[in-house]
Image 1 (cartoon, each protein chain N blue to C red):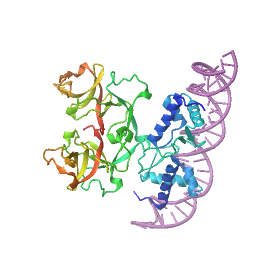
Image 2: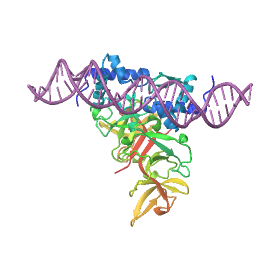
Image 3: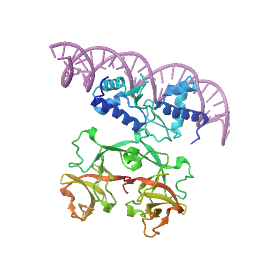
Image 4: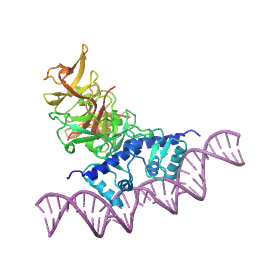
Length: 207
Length: 207
DNA sequence: CCGCATACTGTTCATATGTACAGTACACGC
DNA sequence: GCGTGTACTGTACATATGAACAGTATGCGG
């Protein structure tokens, strides 16, 4: 990959300045007008070159969607909103309106997960999963409908409440293990509903 | 001038939220889609009402040019790319080109952290921090230059290598505690460089 | 009851905008 | 010389987008 040319650097600077002053991206024609290009394709070429070199991000066909590649902002293509369910009875199935749902935004690529509509999050309450190094206040990202493998952390609906268990198999039969000595170790998996399999975890700083 | 209605407040919040997440304004059709309006005019009406009430600024006929009226300044970056440093000698100071840097994208709001250029990540190697429930393969998000509080996990440069320690104070003097029995418990903090304070953690699914 | 604002549905229209295609000129490496 | 990338001009096109027009329904104050 070649280096960024002087002209392209100027275009990138203009885009950066424009975003600073206007709080949004310039259009291709505005770029052309600023540099005195009589053809808008000149601006389009520069923008394409910058995109190919990774200096610019954009959303295809979206108006005014140029983002400097090194900026902290990124277009929404990698963004995913995950609903957060607390220790709520009925857990996965939400009775509340979508507007009331708390969401966290994550980048599926960074988390190494797929972006599906069946992905959700649980805010962990208590230290019941400390045996798996999952702490109170952690956000566990789960995928609904995924086939669990032995050792996976899963969310199960028990007594109308979402709880985290470890999935195991013994003599070919699946069972769930609670990582909490207070509860019985073995729960036949057939008796309960597995809501999702843990695919990632997010922990915030305390205090 | 009438007051802003509840519905209009919702629309305004969505616009503000969209700008923070995407770094740009939503289109009228995107607003309509978000609220489930079957007609885009509904969104246009709300936007016009907000403009008349001074809660929104915009550029006439310009695509994606809605700005919350209270501040034209650049909104907080919603999604930021954080460079990942492994167990690399020299750690925080990178000798490598920026293109070679691995990055993870996170939403500062979701993680409960500030978006600064001094934020970085370390990919944890080994189980030396298992006492703090930080596992091999976890990504620890740290902020450089932050004042650590007792109990905080910090990254320190020891023997030219970035290692994680717990920050403590004893008799008013700061020291670092290794959460690993193999290493000495007490390291005078004055002797080493604290690169950053842990503000969040991200764990991917194994395998 | 009337007037008025809010909160929509449904449609149409002008244009702003990104993108593609065709072509010219120049510099540079092999 | 030849191929490649940069740096443009000029035209054309599909569509995303803001804006306008014609309605319907609801609530609220006078």
